[in-house]
Length: 356
Image 1 (tube, rainbow, N blue to C red):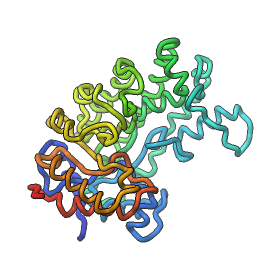
Image 2 (image 1 turned 90 degrees about the vertical axis):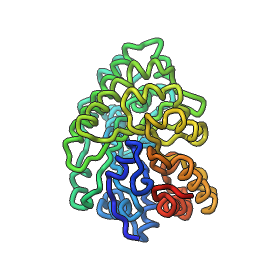
Image 3 (image 1 turned 180 degrees about the horizontal axis):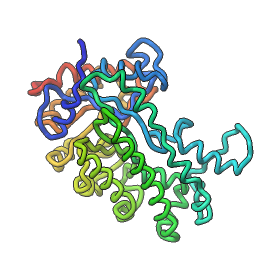
Image 4 (image 1 turned 120 degrees about the vertical axis):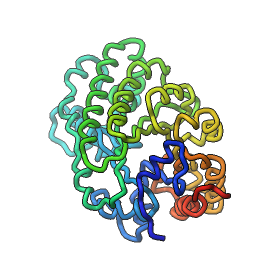
């Protein structure tokens, strides 16, 4: 089957209308999975092959990362990694990687650390991929930029233990770090949205555990959500979609996400949330993305994946407002056959009107 990407398919679904078929959506598919699909090696620098994968796998967009930190983890490719390494090495010339203690003290534990931190260098974001990919994009395909990691990056810079103590013991310091991180991410988004063929912005910023928010939501409302609102406003002015990824139980902030202006939330963490309940309670106000358990993609059978995918299509698909994908991402430890089962089931049974 020749795939024809059409970003309006996703936009229509997120307007709670029924497009021609249920869209597929992922923030990340491991290069190993992409390589298996194309039967050739796909690398981070190979933008042409990446577009080839996303088109032929049935997606209407390609996700690209910009910002200080890549989705999911601190990789060597994340721009903040190099900045933090310079801080930790304290001027020493060495190729050895100095451990970044994100659990306790981080690299900003007091006002002196905050003042010395090279914020200007951290603000130098690389947009080259967004320009280099342009010749390879089909006419109706768009880029969704994954960015805006404000909460996560702030606590990682401060170390989670120090961050939590600072909420109550040195809130002025914490406020300044949030402000610096927020300003950099928003400035990056402002520059990004001037680039052609950007279809939306996907904030990838885990806010919750399975049991609930990582910190009292009052702090998120004070220090994080105002930045989200600014990003939402920028997207609305340009007619772009605005998405949120957060694992964990996000029910305590659901009304906030609606008022901020997110078009959809991802992935409705299947380990702690009921996607049917989400559709019933907020499905007219928020779109839903994802929800096929990543562990099932790793350890289940293709038949189990097909059955769960059909269940989601049947129960969540009608009326629009849904794009199906994994319950987090498609990692390199997912079974390729299971990924294919999920994807192919959507293409076969996700035709509107749904008739499973």
